[in-house]
Amino acid sequence: MINEGDRAPALKVETSGGETIDLAAPGRPLVLYFYPKDDTSGCTREPQDFTALAGDFERAGVKVVGMSRDPMKKHDKFIGKYDLKVPLASDEDGQVSDAFGTWVQKSM
Image 1 (cartoon, rainbow, N blue to C red):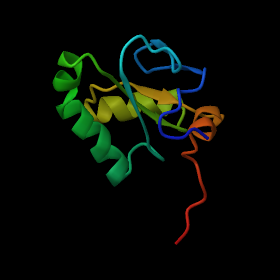
Image 2: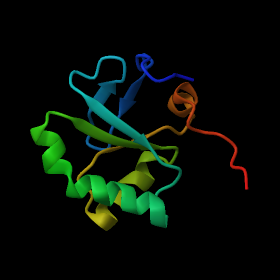
Image 3: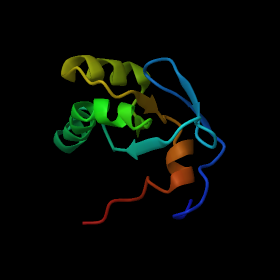
Image 4: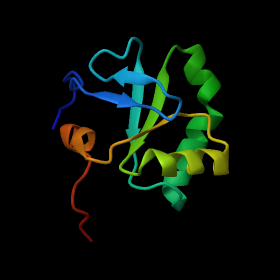
């Protein structure tokens, strides 16, 4: 797990747009947000909000990518259904989520 101020791990992810991003050297500022699952209420609202602000992020020179453990095929349907303008990346094996410490057991 990384801590605030640490460099991102040297992992590469492929986005829904076909771009490969090296998280340790993305080439420009990167907002990588994690969410549990496509097509749930909260997890739908988040990329819709990023989509609404996509132009602002682009003008600031910032790349935004959403990451979940859903497969890319499911991401493609999700993007099409909601006309999302933010690329998504798949972490099916959990390697990225584990490195960032974002996948933990939910406690009620």
